[in-house]
Each structure stands twice: as structure tokens, then as C-alpha cells.
Image (cartoon, helix red, strand yellow):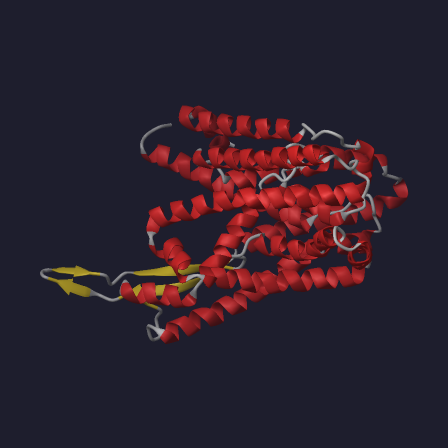
Length: 423
């Protein structure tokens, strides 16, 4: 408690937190401003019947559910960042820029991600509007109105990205993550109200089971996010003149869940692709477009096949993204250049093989857990029989991960100020 109160005693840190809160409030205001021509009741009914769009609403910061001017939120920027990271595998020059050019290369990489956000936002806004028009959520607009809405939504995505970067500059949390967190928290009061209204004494056992599952899930997510394998690293002694360097020991931390929530985003993108493909095909062939749309909706309605496929996608993408973010060859080379080695393992190829083996083993448990988190709503409904209450493992994963990251950043700033003598 004393540590928490110190946040408000330090003027600089207090101003940073108030600035972040102000920017989040500004985003929430934008998320409440709908685009023209929205049928609110039809929109609510459609979202209640579509689990995938409910998931995407998290990443819009809650703006998608109201078809606001920031309905896509930071989604296009996340997509652009993922695509840029994938390009580091395909193009050696992109890999060199991202990994070897230091801060300058990172800044250029981020700038390319921002530029790529614009076409992604334009395409995604057009696709969403066409999907909602086909479902009768919004009426068919004329060409000018359609173009106007697409431009407004694209501009809203760029504003969301800008607000996220302003928040990140305050160094008390990741701006993109905090915007997503704000959208999730904004839905808690309405979800709690629905739960209270639907309560009956006969469902007491189911409600208690629901709470127990929620607590266990939070504990599991904390354990997963904080879990890491520490590989001991030793450094050889080197003599230069009359001085001796090295001879120290350290460790290399390998996180169990190094992929974060990215595999969930990849998986949901694959699951959404048939619906977007149907909207494109329907422009050229009504018959084929409806066939693809009916297949996609029928597949999602089959909870067993949908859950199994979703789990397998998350499992596979966890390994895939871990391979992108952690390169055993590069780590082994850098370790050898700095004079470090794993005790009992030869430097070079043997160290690389050792890292690969360790990463594959710890990623297995991270992939299984993320897969279970993805299909948790289906499992909870099966065990509790409650259709009005669901635990979104993805939402909890985001909330817990962002909260832990923000706490670490705030604590580090407090530690620095204590070190400088500022109480």
C-alpha cells in the first residue's frame, strides 16, 4: 500500500499517470461516436450472435461494438507490425535493419509499420462495412457515403495509433496494450449487470464454479507470463595488459510464453478470413459468395469442430511466432562473440542445438495453455451450463499481462527516483 501511495507523492510520475488516464479517456470518447447510419439494435443483435467479432472488439478498444469512428482501433497497426515482423524472415535486408542496425533500424522499422497501417485500415474498414451491410446492420450507402465512412474509419485508426504512441512515451505502460485494456474494462459493468439480472438460486453452484474457474485461470496466466527457464551462462577470463576481464557468470531467461497474445490474433485472423473472402467473392458471384458465407457460419456454429480447429491454430502459431522472435542461431553467435558459453556445451552449433531443444520443450506447455485459453468460453459453458456468462481467456490474458507489465514499469520508475533520493 505504501508503494502505491508513493506514486502520487512523486510529482513527475503522478503527472505521467494523469496524462495517460487523460489520453485513455479521450480514446473512450472517440469510441462512443458512431459513424452515420447505424442501426443500434441490429448491431447489438449481430454482435451477440458472432463470437469472432466480439473477440475483435477487444482489439478495437471497445469501438467496434458501437461502429465508432475508431471502430478498428489499433487492429490495423497490430496487423502491420505482424506483417513487418514476418517480412524479416523473407527479406534479409529487413532482418538486418530490425536486428543489427540498433535504435536507428528500430525507428525505421516502426515508421514502415505506421505507413503500412494506412492501407490495412482502408481495406479492413471497407471489408467490415460490406460485411455489416450484407447483414442488414447498416443500410446500403451511396458511393460518396461509403468512401466518406472508409476515410473516417481509416483516420480514426491512425488517431488510435497516435494516442497509443503518446501513452507509450510516458513510460508507464505500453500504449497499444493499455488502449485494448481500456476497451475490455469498459465492458465489465454491463457484463456484471447481465449476470446479476439472470441470477437464480438454482444456479448458485454454477456461479460458484464460474468464480473458481476464473480465479484459477488468473493464477495460471500469471504463472505462464512470469514463468521462464534460466539457462546458466559463463564468460571466459581474458587478460589484456595488466587487467583481467570476464570470468563472471549470468543466465539467459527464456520465457514459457514468449509469443504473448500474438498466436491468438493469428488464429482469429484465419477464422475470420472465410467471412471476408465471402464478401469479396459475392461482388462477382452471388452464388459462390453465399456458399462460402454459409460454410463459414455453419463451421463456427459447430462448437466442437470450431473449438478443436481454434486450439490447433493457436498451438501451431505459438511455435511459429516463437521461431520468429527467438533465433537460436543469432543468440548462439552473439554469445560466442561476447566470450560467453553454456557450461558443458560447446560454443557454436552445439549451443544453437541446445537452445532449440530447450525452446521447443518450454514452448510446448505455453502452446497448450494458450490453446486452452482460446477455447475457454466453450469449455466454461459446457461445465457450468451458463450461456449468459462466459470467461474470455483472451481478455483475461490481456488484462493480466498488461497489468503486470504496467506494474513493472511504474515500479522501475519509483526505484530510479528512490535511487536519486526523490521520495
